[in-house]
Length: 443
Image 1 (cartoon, rainbow, N blue to C red):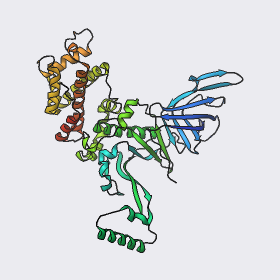
Image 2: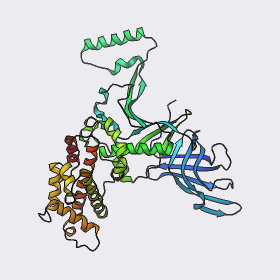
Image 3: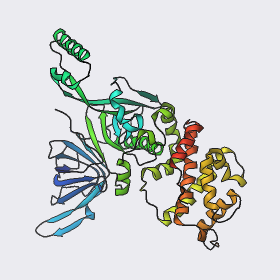
Image 4: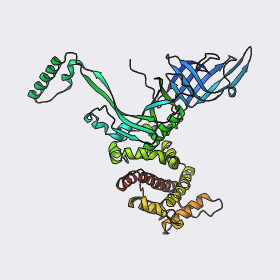
C-alpha cells in the first residue's frame, strides 16, 4: 500500500481522541484537527473530563485514519469558552505549532534524519519540459557536509505497470526499426520471464537532512526552514517545505504538517509556475555544495532577508515601502563596514561593489526626478527624512509610492548580492540575478 503523503500547502481535517501523556490514556478527550496553509494547525475541542489537561506543551492522540499522532504547541485550555451547567465544559479552537502523524514522539525522541521536498524545486534544478531526458539514479545528485550535518539531494520517481504492452507506447515511423525494437523486447522478455515493465509517471527531487548532533523535532524543523530560506532567496519567491518526514532511532517515522499561517498572496506566489530559463538563478549556475555548506554559518546575519523573501506578498503599501528603504539602507551600512568602507561611503561602497550598471542606472533615474545630487547624499537624505520625525520632507514630497518601492527593491537586491558573493556565486550570475529582478522603467 502506498503511504499517504501530507502536503503543507493543502488542507486537512482529522477527528481524534487526545491525551496529555503518551504512556497513559487518562484525561482523554475528543477533538477535531483543522489544518490549512492560511490558518495553520488548530484543534477544536470540548472538555468535560476533569482529568483532561489544563496546560501542556504536547498532546498525543489517535486519529480517525487509524494513525497515532503528536501535537506540539503551548496549550492553555482555560483560555477558551467555559460553560457551567450540570458539568463544567471547556470548548474552543486552539492553535499549535506542528502535527506529527504516525507515532507518539516524546521529549527525548531524537530525529535520525529527515526527508523533505520544496514546491517548484524540480523546475529550479531541471526544466520540466525536458524531464524525460533525465535518467533516474540511486546515488545522490549532490552531497554536502558541515561540521555537524549532512545534506543529500536525491531523485524520487513513481511508476505505473505497463506489462508486455510497453511496445505500444513507443513508436517510430521507421517500420524496420519499429519491428527490430519489438523483437528485441520479446527476446528480453523470453530471457527474463519474471520481468515486468513499468513506465515512469513522476520525477522529483527530495532532500535528506541528517545531523551528527542529537536534534529533537523542533530543532530539525528549524534547520529545514533555514534550507528553505536559502532557496527562497535564490529563486526570489516564497519557499517552504511541502512534504516533510522524520525518521527516529527506534525506526518510527512521522509525517509533519507545519503551521505556516501564510497570507493568501504569499501562497499564490509560492505555488506560481516559473520557467527554469526565466529564474534569476538556477541549479547549474551555482555551486550548490558550497552554497549550502556556507549558508548555515551565514543564516543568522541574513535572517531578516530570509523572512522578507519567504513571506513576500507581492503587494506593497506606502508604509511597507518606507520601511523597506529604512531596513535595507541600514543593512547597506553593515555591508559597508564588512567591506572596510569609510563612513562617507556607507551607502555607495556596497552599491558600487555589487550593483550591475543597469541597477545603478535604475536607482539614479529615481533620484533624477528630484535633483542631480551625488547618489550617496540623496540616499542619506531620503533615509533621514523617512526615519526622523520633524525633519523637513523635501524629497519625500516629490516621490511616488512606485518610486519608494523601486528604491527599496534596489537596496534589497544589493543586500542579496552581498549574500550571493559570500555563497560563492560569480559576479556574472549576481548581475544576472539583479537584471532579472530589476524594477521596470515605466517612463
